[in-house]
Length: 253
Image (cartoon, rainbow, N blue to C red; front, side):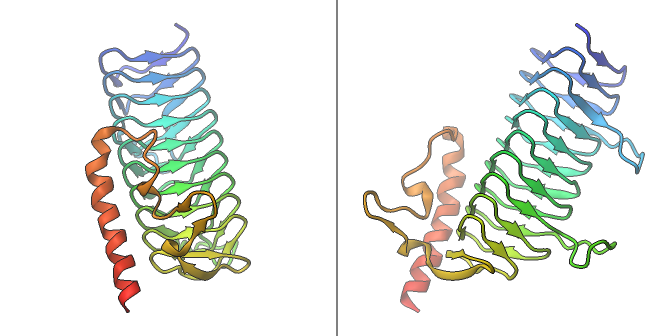
């Protein structure tokens, strides 16, 4: 094996580490993980404080992924290839990061959230549970670039951001909201609203989106649970109950 595992690294049982991968001193990798070729886990940051990286059990990190110090992940992390996660990214269970995703650090991500490929997430972003982010989405955080101002994006539980959306600094996407493809989001989007356009404007509630063939499509867990583990269903139903309450309240207003 042509990998480098530094003396202070802690490696659990049944862990596979690929060729030309470096595991730094400040890293804990728990049981039943796969780390691909040409990865760096625990890359030093300019802060130089060597905070712990924790990769929890059942994770699969594919080749050419770089994870910086201070980042922590719940169980069953899965990455594509050429993923970069900068320092102090605190992420929940069963996170999926598509190839070429770039997480700029100092951010939080909840449980069971999905990123497709080529997503850039700026610093100070806050992302909830069961969020879907489709390819090419840009999370910006500098309202007057270039500057030292940092105002991250917030996305609440069970929202969907479709492909090639740009999210302006400091915006909040409400729970259960859906953002149409290629939109530019300059202002906050309320809970359970479908918004689209440049700039994005709310068009209707998500329960008013209907497909001629399949009917009601949102909130999406009413018809889509594929690729989620059964142990996620209790939390999914809890979040879904809140979304349905918001819909019911809006209908009666």
